[in-house]
Image (cartoon, rainbow, N blue to C red; front, side, top):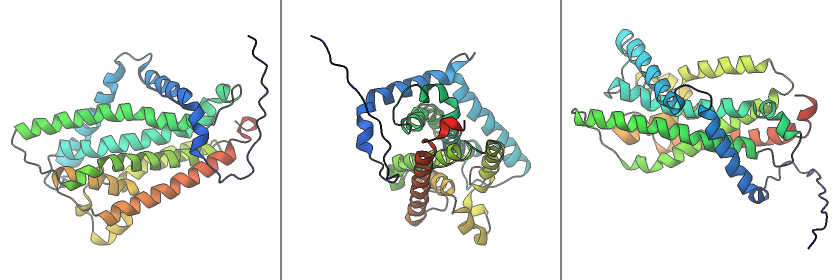
Length: 281
């Protein structure tokens, strides 16, 4: 049998707001292969491989314990400082990894994008999904430390908020992906924004509850800090584990809405940018 030559006519959709997930279904295999590629690239050509995923949060936690716990004596809501800081660090790491890995999606994949047609949004989606492996490794480190403290006399009380944990991770991924897509669209033309944004992300950590509990801040600042969805995500995570901290469903819903709006804006900006990015990258 001979297969007739097929001609594919690719035309852009005029309506940029028509984002249909069903259009991605034929690319399931490509999506899986991209996830596999991202995972292997994390530790390829490294001396210690996946051990770096343990080393980085451990070193950061140690520095925070010494700097903010021993020197400045910032309270941790009665939670052992290593547990307090590590619980925030692992979520913050996943959030910033999602931003950093998706922000350069056009520049990093220019050779692939210029040769093969596929929905470009698959690339950042596969990256954010692959990063769950790194998050899972760091989460296992946190659970190990939690068990260690439990056997050494620290009592903690899980509550019903623990069932919201998958929602917290989805929220974190959506927010990081949305911001990353916005940055990827902006930095096609304005590359110097990369430096400003990288600096801004570093500063943003000090506007979240990674290094301090929300209860330790003045009341008139709390509402301002809770505008940041990551603050609500981390506070809810700690409250679910230790029943300590300031959180409520209203704050979590607010974080979900803000993240959804940012993700939607990011997708729209990404869809606009992908039409002519090859001429600008």
